[in-house]
Image 1 (cartoon, rainbow, N blue to C red):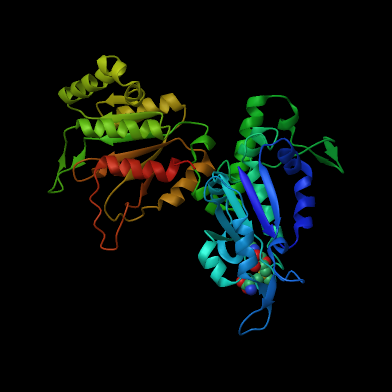
Image 2 (cartoon, rainbow, N blue to C red):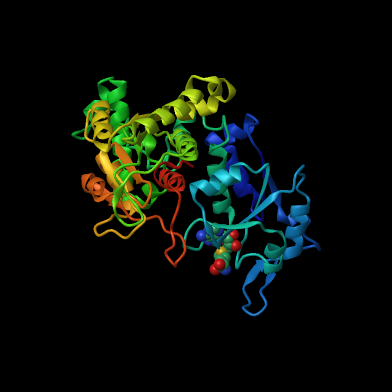
Length: 417
Ligand SMILES: C[S@@+](CC[C@H](N)C(=O)[O-])C[C@H]1O[C@@H](n2cnc3c(N)ncnc32)[C@H](O)[C@@H]1O
C-alpha cells in the first residue's frame, strides 16, 4: 500500500513517520509513505500556497498548488483522496479497515480556514473528522489515519494478536492490562493472570472485555458479532408444532426442503451449534432425515462438501420439550429461550436489549422460530424472552419467510465485521 501525504509542514510529518512501530514498518518496506510539500508546486518568488478567503478574510490553502501536488502522485491505480476535516465523517475502525484496503491513499492536510471548496469538490473522495473539535491543521489527523491504517497492514505491528485483540477490531473494548511488578503501591495484579492457567486467563480476559464494553460503550457491543464472547453455544429452533393456523387454531405445518437448506446454511455461516427442527409427525422427520442424509453422507456430501457442513448442524426432534431437554444436557445449563414473533407482543424486548442481556449473563441462547401463522402460546409461555418483530417499512407489513427471519436475526446477533 502506498500513502501520499500532501502538506505545508513536511518536516512535522517526516519526523513522526521515522519513529517507533510506524518507522520500522516503513523501513521494512511493509508500506510506502511519501510526504509531498505543497510549496514545491507553488508559483512565484514567494511560493505562495495560501490566500485570503472571499467573504471572511481569513487565510486558506489555494486550489492550484494542491491540484498540482496531487497530480504529482505516481500511482498505478487512481488514488483515493482523503481530506481530514472537522466537517467529515467521524473516523471509526470499520472506516480505517476500508482505507487499509486502498492501494493508493492520498491525504490532503488543510490549514487555516481549510482548503478551497472547488478543490475538495473536484478531487476529494472522503472528508474524515477526528471528532467534534477544531485543530489548527490536518497534519495530526493525517498522522492518526496513517497510524491506524498501518497497524492493519500485516507485519507492521510485530504480533498480529495485539491488533486483533485491540478495542473495536475484536468487536469489544480491550481487556485491562497489567505488567510487573505484581504488586504496586499496595495494588495487586488480579491473581488469575499470574497462576499460569491459560484457559482461566482467556476466560477472565473475555469477561472483562465484555463487562467494560457494556458499561462504557454499549453501542459498540450492539454492532459486534457476539459469538466469540460466549462460553457456550447458540441454537436455532424451527417449530412445526404447536403453531397457529390462519384461524388462530393450534396446528402443525409441513417442512420444506428450501427452509432446511437455507436455515442450515445460515446456521453454519453464523456459527450456530445446532439447527433444531421440531415436528411430531414421524413421516416428516423421516423426510428431513433423508434430505439431511443425502447431503451429509450420501452422494450430495461428495458433490458439495460445503452443504455437508451446513447440514451437519441439523438435529431433528419430535417436540419442543425434547429439543430443549437435549439442549440443557448438552450445554450443562438452561438455555436462554428467545421466542420470535411477527406480531406485536406485550412485554417483548428489543433485539439489542436481548443481545446485551445474552452477553452480560453469558447465556446460551436458543432462538425459537414459528412456522405457519407463528408460535402457539404454549411455546411463547416456555420462553424466557420474546423478541420484538423484525420490521421494515413504516406501514408495518412484515410477512417474512421463516428462513429470512432466521438470517436477519442471526446477522443482528452474530454478524461479524
Ligand atoms: C482550523 S481547521 C479549519 C476548520 C474549518 N474552518 C471548519 O470550521 O470546518 C484547519 C484544518 O485542520 C484540519 N482539522 C481541524 N480539525 C479537524 C478535525 N476535528 N478532524 C480532522 N481534521 C481537522 C483540517 O484539515 C482543516 O482544514
